[in-house]
Amino acid sequence: MNNIPFTQTFSDWASLAGYQLIAKNNECLVTDFGETSYDIRSSDGMYSLTSRQRSVEQFLMSSIDVVDSERFLTALLGDDIRACRHLPRISYAAQLTDICPDCQIVDEGENRLILVDGLGQNRAIFRSPIDIADDVIWFSWILDAPLENLRASYLNPNGRPLFPECRIGPKSGVPFSNR
Image (tube, rainbow, N blue to C red; front, side):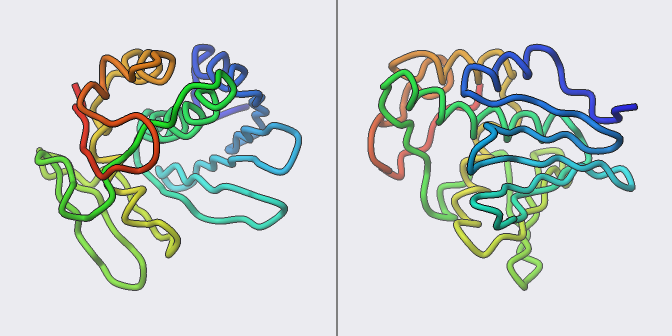
């Protein structure tokens, strides 16, 4: 029985990026059957997301809501979909000061950052020393974005509706709208 309730819409999204979902027990693998895969595990009310590149596993984030894990993966796969469609990259904010004004970051030390939403709820934990600030920052901007708007923005050449203020192309450090 699969306890990770990803939707058919997410499965279809993963397919657009060349990935397939494989569910078993409390785990879901999102794989391209090549060098890259993402693994979502459910344990003790948390959903942990890791990536694997060439057999090296790296923790990405964990959350208490599977929708936040789906949102994070939707954005990661969105980058791949844009590349497959020869669309330019969507640039994300690049410094901790660029966090969405509705959110805050709590630094617990030892490469552990907690993203707190505007209601004071801990929404995601990040523990990777590689690009940890980038992950927390860009995720803060899409934290409450409707999944359908997030998918539409990655498919739109201009990044609309969520990324209208964002520069398309190399990293620019320009924040974007999360609504």
